[in-house]
Image 1: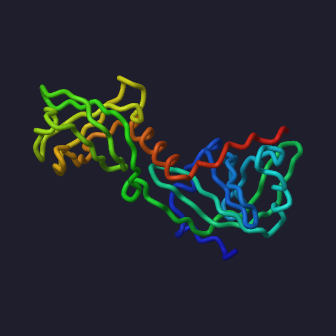
Image 2: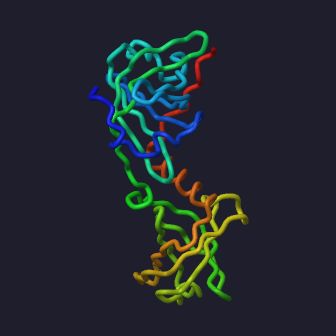
Image 3: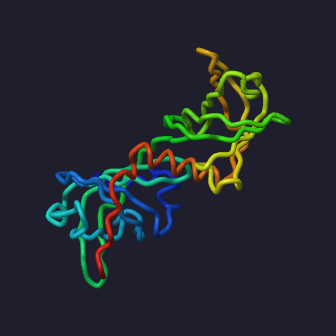
Length: 231
């Protein structure tokens, strides 16, 4: 691996905390592996818990953990999916199951806030001043969403620039979290009105819920959870 160049590394690599969930892709091994971050020493190693090879779907895992095999690591930080390639250094089962890999020299980011738009179909409560109603959430990203209103619904009379508040289960606890939006686009087709909304006020807890939903549905965490090896 090239010598470590910390000027190429984002702050996120030094800000992650033990317990952060990681997704591993190991060369030659078909399954993606879910585990957790333990610690690192700059320029020397990156350390994580070692999943149990006895877990369902991880048969033969240890055969691919030989020194020098390549591995990719992905994790979510501040609304971004970060990832880097590395090489396996070593692993140990005693006294604790741990996996050592090279410390990264460069990390790339996939920005959920700007790029990922997920189609969905959820009922959402909408409030716009004295106007209240229910619509269907058609898709969502970290910056906005689209809603569909039935013909004759008062929400279909909203105009571009109107401020609205949304409440939906994927934003957090039902009845406890709302999301401020502004109408940025409208389209009527076959009597149904579609509203394009931009988020204007995203509480921190709501942002985490949206990030979690985008991350899960986009497939980053679609592999079944692997129990950690017993110490």
